[in-house]
Length: 182
Image (cartoon, rainbow, N blue to C red; front, side, top):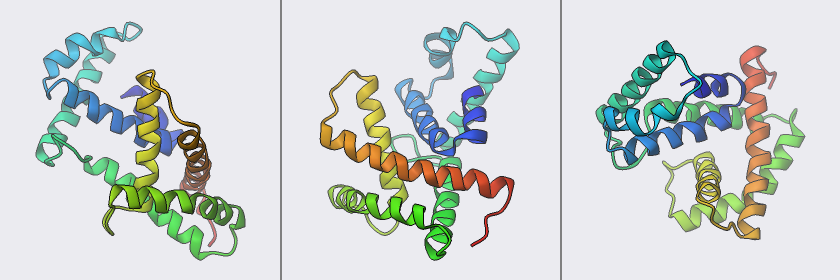
Protein backbone atom coordinates (compact mmCIF):
# COMPACT_ATOMS: atom_id res chain seq x y z
CA UNK A 1 0.00 0.00 0.00
CA UNK A 2 2.69 2.48 1.01
CA UNK A 3 4.91 1.43 -1.88
CA UNK A 4 1.96 1.49 -4.27
CA UNK A 5 1.01 5.03 -3.26
CA UNK A 6 4.59 6.24 -3.68
CA UNK A 7 5.03 4.54 -7.05
CA UNK A 8 1.67 5.69 -8.37
CA UNK A 9 2.69 9.29 -7.75
CA UNK A 10 6.22 9.05 -9.12
CA UNK A 11 6.69 6.00 -11.37
CA UNK A 12 3.55 4.71 -13.06
CA UNK A 13 5.48 1.93 -14.84
CA UNK A 14 6.90 0.66 -11.54
CA UNK A 15 3.45 1.01 -9.97
CA UNK A 16 1.82 -1.28 -12.51
CA UNK A 17 4.52 -3.94 -12.18
CA UNK A 18 4.20 -3.70 -8.38
CA UNK A 19 0.42 -4.11 -8.55
CA UNK A 20 0.76 -7.18 -10.77
CA UNK A 21 3.11 -8.60 -8.14
CA UNK A 22 0.53 -7.84 -5.41
CA UNK A 23 -2.09 -9.75 -7.42
CA UNK A 24 0.25 -12.74 -7.69
CA UNK A 25 1.08 -12.62 -3.97
CA UNK A 26 -2.64 -12.69 -3.20
CA UNK A 27 -3.07 -15.67 -5.54
CA UNK A 28 -0.14 -17.44 -3.85
CA UNK A 29 -1.94 -17.11 -0.50
CA UNK A 30 -5.23 -18.39 -1.98
CA UNK A 31 -7.04 -15.11 -1.32
CA UNK A 32 -6.79 -15.83 2.42
CA UNK A 33 -6.10 -12.55 4.23
CA UNK A 34 -5.27 -14.38 7.46
CA UNK A 35 -2.57 -16.51 5.78
CA UNK A 36 -1.29 -13.49 3.89
CA UNK A 37 -1.10 -11.45 7.11
CA UNK A 38 0.59 -14.21 9.08
CA UNK A 39 3.18 -15.25 6.49
CA UNK A 40 3.75 -12.10 4.43
CA UNK A 41 2.55 -8.89 6.03
CA UNK A 42 4.03 -9.88 9.39
CA UNK A 43 7.51 -9.50 7.85
CA UNK A 44 7.01 -5.74 7.50
CA UNK A 45 8.63 -4.98 10.84
CA UNK A 46 9.20 -1.27 10.35
CA UNK A 47 5.52 -0.23 10.34
CA UNK A 48 3.31 0.86 13.23
CA UNK A 49 0.29 -1.12 14.40
CA UNK A 50 -1.97 1.43 12.71
CA UNK A 51 -0.05 1.02 9.44
CA UNK A 52 -0.27 -2.79 9.73
CA UNK A 53 -4.03 -2.46 10.14
CA UNK A 54 -4.22 -0.16 7.08
CA UNK A 55 -2.03 -2.54 5.09
CA UNK A 56 -4.22 -5.52 5.95
CA UNK A 57 -7.32 -3.56 4.92
CA UNK A 58 -5.69 -2.53 1.64
CA UNK A 59 -4.84 -6.15 0.80
CA UNK A 60 -8.37 -7.18 1.81
CA UNK A 61 -9.78 -4.58 -0.57
CA UNK A 62 -7.58 -5.85 -3.42
CA UNK A 63 -8.72 -9.42 -2.64
CA UNK A 64 -12.35 -8.28 -2.84
CA UNK A 65 -11.70 -6.51 -6.15
CA UNK A 66 -10.03 -9.59 -7.63
CA UNK A 67 -12.92 -11.79 -6.58
CA UNK A 68 -15.65 -9.45 -7.78
CA UNK A 69 -13.88 -8.76 -11.08
CA UNK A 70 -13.30 -12.43 -11.81
CA UNK A 71 -9.50 -12.36 -11.91
CA UNK A 72 -8.78 -15.03 -9.33
CA UNK A 73 -6.87 -17.32 -11.71
CA UNK A 74 -5.41 -14.79 -14.12
CA UNK A 75 -5.87 -11.29 -15.41
CA UNK A 76 -5.74 -7.94 -13.69
CA UNK A 77 -8.07 -5.77 -11.66
CA UNK A 78 -9.67 -2.73 -13.26
CA UNK A 79 -7.27 -0.38 -11.45
CA UNK A 80 -4.41 -1.97 -13.40
CA UNK A 81 -6.37 -2.01 -16.64
CA UNK A 82 -7.07 1.70 -16.21
CA UNK A 83 -3.34 2.41 -15.99
CA UNK A 84 -2.83 0.63 -19.33
CA UNK A 85 -5.76 2.58 -20.82
CA UNK A 86 -4.35 5.91 -19.59
CA UNK A 87 -0.85 5.10 -20.80
CA UNK A 88 -2.23 3.98 -24.17
CA UNK A 89 -4.06 7.29 -24.48
CA UNK A 90 -0.86 9.27 -23.83
CA UNK A 91 1.08 6.95 -26.17
CA UNK A 92 -1.44 7.47 -28.98
CA UNK A 93 -1.35 11.24 -28.55
CA UNK A 94 2.46 11.29 -28.49
CA UNK A 95 2.61 9.17 -31.64
CA UNK A 96 0.10 11.40 -33.44
CA UNK A 97 2.19 14.49 -32.70
CA UNK A 98 5.37 15.55 -34.47
CA UNK A 99 6.55 17.36 -31.31
CA UNK A 100 8.03 14.25 -29.67
CA UNK A 101 10.67 12.80 -32.05
CA UNK A 102 12.68 11.15 -29.24
CA UNK A 103 9.58 9.28 -28.11
CA UNK A 104 8.89 8.19 -31.69
CA UNK A 105 12.49 6.94 -31.94
CA UNK A 106 12.21 4.98 -28.67
CA UNK A 107 8.95 3.41 -29.84
CA UNK A 108 10.32 2.47 -33.26
CA UNK A 109 13.39 0.94 -31.62
CA UNK A 110 11.09 -1.13 -29.38
CA UNK A 111 8.61 -2.00 -32.14
CA UNK A 112 10.37 -5.13 -33.52
CA UNK A 113 10.52 -6.50 -29.96
CA UNK A 114 6.84 -5.69 -29.44
CA UNK A 115 5.89 -7.41 -32.70
CA UNK A 116 7.89 -10.51 -31.73
CA UNK A 117 6.35 -10.57 -28.23
CA UNK A 118 2.84 -10.30 -29.59
CA UNK A 119 3.49 -13.08 -32.13
CA UNK A 120 4.83 -15.39 -29.40
CA UNK A 121 1.90 -14.56 -27.12
CA UNK A 122 -0.68 -14.98 -29.84
CA UNK A 123 -1.92 -11.55 -28.76
CA UNK A 124 -5.17 -10.33 -30.23
CA UNK A 125 -6.40 -6.79 -30.81
CA UNK A 126 -7.77 -6.58 -27.25
CA UNK A 127 -4.28 -7.19 -25.87
CA UNK A 128 -2.45 -3.90 -26.27
CA UNK A 129 1.14 -3.40 -27.33
CA UNK A 130 1.82 -1.74 -24.00
CA UNK A 131 0.47 -4.72 -22.09
CA UNK A 132 2.88 -6.94 -24.01
CA UNK A 133 5.72 -4.63 -22.97
CA UNK A 134 4.69 -4.79 -19.33
CA UNK A 135 4.43 -8.59 -19.50
CA UNK A 136 8.03 -8.79 -20.70
CA UNK A 137 9.27 -6.57 -17.87
CA UNK A 138 7.20 -8.41 -15.28
CA UNK A 139 8.44 -11.76 -16.53
CA UNK A 140 12.06 -10.63 -16.31
CA UNK A 141 11.41 -9.26 -12.82
CA UNK A 142 10.01 -12.64 -11.72
CA UNK A 143 12.97 -14.51 -13.21
CA UNK A 144 15.42 -12.27 -11.37
CA UNK A 145 13.49 -12.61 -8.09
CA UNK A 146 13.70 -16.39 -8.48
CA UNK A 147 17.45 -16.16 -9.06
CA UNK A 148 17.10 -17.57 -12.55
CA UNK A 149 19.31 -16.60 -15.45
CA UNK A 150 17.98 -14.13 -17.99
CA UNK A 151 19.43 -14.56 -21.48
CA UNK A 152 21.32 -11.67 -23.05
CA UNK A 153 18.71 -11.45 -25.80
CA UNK A 154 15.87 -11.16 -23.26
CA UNK A 155 17.89 -8.75 -21.13
CA UNK A 156 18.60 -6.52 -24.13
CA UNK A 157 14.94 -6.61 -25.17
CA UNK A 158 13.86 -5.71 -21.63
CA UNK A 159 16.31 -2.80 -21.58
CA UNK A 160 14.91 -1.42 -24.85
CA UNK A 161 11.34 -1.80 -23.57
CA UNK A 162 12.34 -0.22 -20.24
CA UNK A 163 13.70 2.86 -21.98
CA UNK A 164 10.53 3.15 -24.06
CA UNK A 165 8.16 2.66 -21.11
CA UNK A 166 10.30 4.91 -18.92
CA UNK A 167 9.93 7.69 -21.45
CA UNK A 168 6.19 7.07 -21.67
CA UNK A 169 5.96 7.13 -17.86
CA UNK A 170 7.82 10.44 -17.74
CA UNK A 171 5.42 11.96 -20.28
CA UNK A 172 2.49 10.55 -18.29
CA UNK A 173 3.76 12.30 -15.14
CA UNK A 174 4.40 15.53 -17.02
CA UNK A 175 0.91 15.46 -18.50
CA UNK A 176 -0.60 15.02 -15.03
CA UNK A 177 1.21 18.07 -13.62
CA UNK A 178 1.02 20.30 -16.67
CA UNK A 179 -0.85 19.02 -19.74
CA UNK A 180 1.38 18.30 -22.69
CA UNK A 181 0.89 20.14 -25.96
CA UNK A 182 0.24 17.81 -28.86
